[in-house]
Length: 294
Length: 281
Image (cartoon, rainbow over all chains, first blue to last red):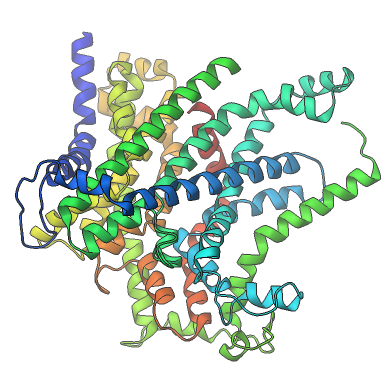
């Protein structure tokens, strides 16, 4: 069989998938680009060409910059905590103790819990009048009077990050644990014979095996955190006083609450561009990490 | 194995207990809320375990009495099953030929790279045109159009998993079958697909869980019991003026049950799927 025919056949087998992807991703993406240069409304008005007006307004406004820093804060802090807790939990799960198999099995639970159920659960825990957090802290004598954790700009973001970390650090732990189990036992034994300290053993023997998988987990979690919508929508809707409003929430408000499809589309494209740049930068890092590990 | 000192042993077990408590406490509390009478949940100081266990909310949510909380919940459950089921079947059916083609024809591999790259796109970048198009064709608030939109998330993922799966099946087996005169589709059906069944199952499982979890598109594109999914129904409960928090917790427990059971029983398959992706990148 000629290679031209093989390639043609491959494209034919791809065709159904490509057709669907063009319909639900390709076309909407192109349409978002077109809309971003118009003043179209979500309902009714098809809009006129306004050039770069939408972009200029967004980039010069304070809304966008505030929201961008809120998003970056959420992504950096929650992903950072998740990576550290995940690696620590994986190191623990890699030791020998009673109930290890059970504990490893339990780690899948927060990951399996639907995001919306997780958000709802923590919203109930943080409830200002009947929530478990207020009750527990008060009964332990750590808190004088009940607080509205999600209702105050000072604590809402921290409360959100805690809820997000609880759901996501176990996944990092499971990925790190799988990587730890791929470290050859001989290598660990050799380092013990050589008298390497625990810290050096981690740094020089274990970390090279962890780096690749952890980089990938870091990339995926950061991209997800940058796009975050669900957990924030359920817990705070971006409030109080916009203190938890991330980029995706801002796009939702612009396009769907205010019905400004045109400027909503430009905002969405700016967010897309940022996520893409982030991913490309990370991609280069991952290749570098993979190269040095090999 | 190194011998452990007693102090080290105690520290290890204490850390393990702490980790177990951190993982379990919120989950146990969700369940306790669902079986506590409303008075216990509003008590100060809060009661951590109900005086009398109360399962009535489960009966309420699973009852089919018209216009009750149960009818709305069951409609959402049905919609979630329909949307996730339809989208999963479609995503796997699209992924099998495409995944095989990319696996056997590396020269078109870049197209899969492009498709996987769409994972970076925030849903908000597609939502406005999708909303306008669905509105134009009168397809808003429809489980099947929602399932179609879910393919944006599911299909790249299943194709990538299927491609990795086909990569592990030797081409020689297929070549042997073709040598014996079997055509391409016969070869795929008789030889390759049976060997790929575990990967098909894993892909379907992941796709179903992704669809079950989805919230953003469902929030935008559904309006009432005809199409609203469980995630939207629960967000409505949480954001609304429901006075009984136990009822919200009960809906949460029921919605979490399918993925949690899948997670516990299919752990090995899930973790190897997740980590293979992680290791291979």
